[in-house]
Image (cartoon, rainbow, N blue to C red; front, side, top):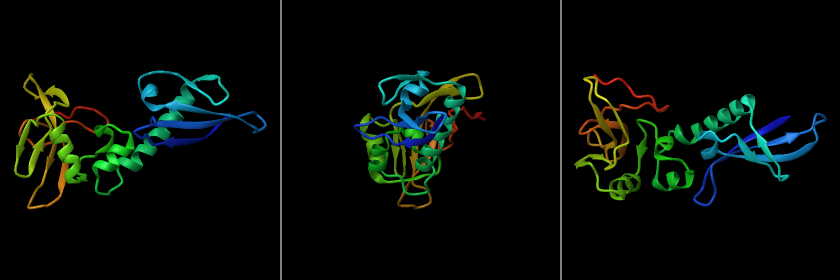
Length: 184
């Protein structure tokens, strides 16, 4: 019997994980198992437990781990708070998993994206990170790169994450679940 599923946020020194307890039929605690999220999302089914054994996850446990992961990440991704570089760095998440379209972000996060590789495009109040996020169809049969894009609109002093946009655009082309939005 598996219970007490908990999301553990990743840190610079520890992997993002989901932990849960294994209990006997009578409810007696046996051990705790730790599912490394990166390994789980890459299809690894066997994860270590505190008693030295490994547990192979089944469909029901997979679904519960995934639900716990989504709920845990949702508290980070959709917090409604200003997203900061420090919060992202401490989250253990990729930028894709950390930011939601429309999030307000601090200067340090935008600067990190601008400075990690030469930016693709920088103008006053507009910045596209230099490395393409994903190549997607433009609706005319050609694939074009999308770029992580931030803007300061309407005289705002705060950056807004507008999504993964074609060059020079501020129109998101990729949904949170990774599905490509149809270009017009």
